[in-house]
Structure formats: C-alpha cells, structure tokens
Length: 102
Image (cartoon, rainbow, N blue to C red; front, side, top):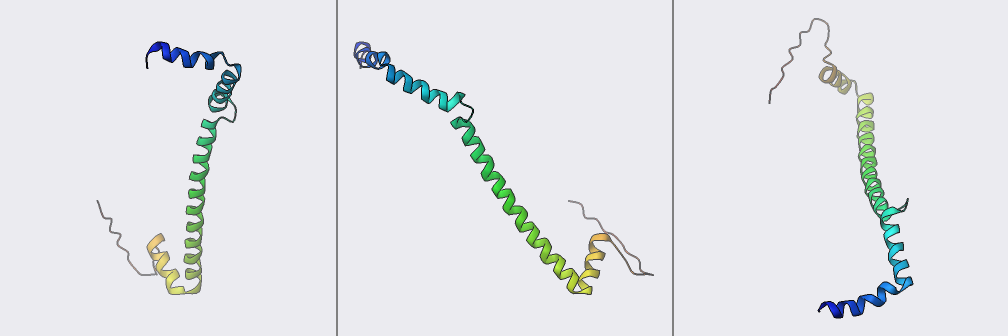
C-alpha cells in the first residue's frame, strides 16, 4: 500500500468527529481516568494477591488450633513442646543445646 492509498483511507476517518471522539474516549478511559483500565488491572492483581494471603493465614490458624488442642489434651505433648520450644527442664536435669550450622 503506497502513501496515496493510505491517505485516501485515513483522511475520512480523521475528519470524522465521531471517530475522533471515540478514540479520545478510549484513550481517556485507558490512561487518564481516575478508574482507568490500567489501575483496575493493578487493583485486580492486588486483590488476587490478598486473597492468596488470606487463604495462607486461614490455613495457618487451623494448623495452630490443631496444635493447641493437641497440647491441651495430653500432658506428655505439652512437656515435649515446652522442652523443644522453650528449652525448659526438670529439676536436677542438665540440657545441652546443639546448634547445627549450614
């Protein structure tokens, strides 16, 4: 397609006020508007990220509730937890803490 044919097809579009108004509207909605399509896309991604985070915390809460029930139901588990997590000991008992290096 040479330049004269291109001008022949484009010139009526450029002179058409409805076409120009439509193009201006599309550009405005896509870029400049307060609720532009770009912002809506970013917000949509943020919402999906927060939904994933929400599910992660729900799963973590359920896991912690199961652990708490287990600790409250059995004294042996409670003693084991206290020894492992808080390095507690019985009277007249010596504890050696071994730290592993990577």
